[in-house]
Image (tube, rainbow, N blue to C red):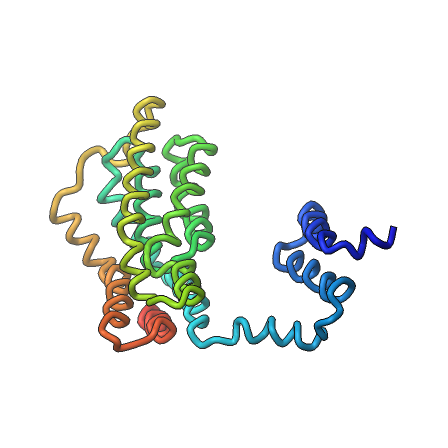
Length: 258
């Protein structure tokens, strides 16, 4: 019986047991790892194991991730997200599906600011989904579009996953950011086409009666100009060697606050 608990595969089983018990993922990973080094692989001192945990994330570039997450939060609470939503509604509200199309486009715009799928989904669930329900869109359709479109945010720079991959693979963060635009735009276009087809079949009406005029589009872009400029300032600063990703994140947060 004791041999089961000392089997090297038992921590893997323990990990899934903790998942099944609805223990948070981070705590499950820590618990199964500590079990392995405490009861199975005792050759490595626990002090050294903890030291490796700390030194693995003791890196200045990793500070870029919380900075960009903070940037998305500042955008949400400062009202800039609503301005971006208004601009997306002007650009895509006349298409079939209405606010569902706005949902897809807004995720792409928010991806250029926060780079976080969780932040994007939380923001759209709070602001946009209630409006979609008021326009007569079903709850399941609204939730599905929000969940699918939030996957675009980590792909479009400055995505947090792009930063982490660049640091782990020891490649340029700026190059990763430039490489993220094309797949992000293609994903957004594919989602909008899918929403258009489903809306045509289901009969979901646009949220606007007509296409926005050029003057109205320019006016909305002017209101959202600071939020639109931030991604380009971040990437341009890194490409020109003016700032590191961490410094760019800090500057973007300062820029968003003031």
